[in-house]
Length: 256
Image (cartoon, rainbow, N blue to C red; front, side, top):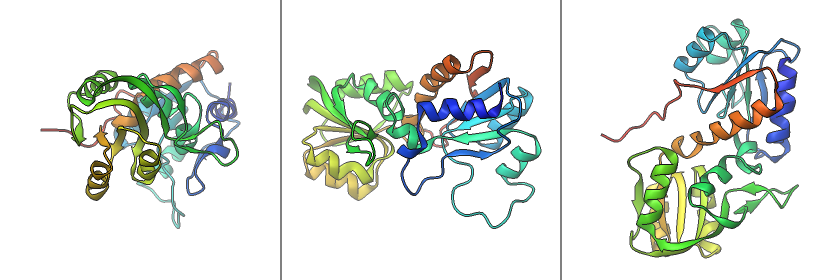
């Protein structure tokens, strides 16, 4: 196996054509012809995650968030991309392609609500069957029951809620990461609950005024559970390659 095999596997799971136009997805650092035996999965490629990759002798990291995003005018010692390249570690980012893909970040979040009859909040231009966010039916119960379910599914003890906890919910929407861009879509589709990673203050007020209760888990908390699903899908496609989720990957915020 080589890094090119990882690229092809990732492209079969989260086709780059599904990514948002502003995003930077794909093989961002490395040589497609380099040999591959170990892959580390993470939401964020922090220095701690990079050290974990070095210690584990991983030849590649799949980092959900891109390590290279906006145009780079320098490539120097001390930057993550430079240090990974110097160490011979390739890095692939799926980001919004994984959000839009079937079985990706948003489907994992929708699973936390046991959502049925789901469809994208905003379909991809090239493929209406997939796209950003998810909206669908849920078994009717109060918001607080869904809050308990989300906390259990995502492995957290606290979330932020804006809006009534006792409101009955039978239709919900989810958006991994930052949900502000898709709140209007969710409101327009008549949902009672919007599950996302983070939302701005005035967007939360807008949701409440529209009769929607918002549950915010923190940004990367809403994305991290998808890494376990990605680990399974990659392992199925890369026989003989050790694929595992990072133990050092962390949400930077915590409740105290």
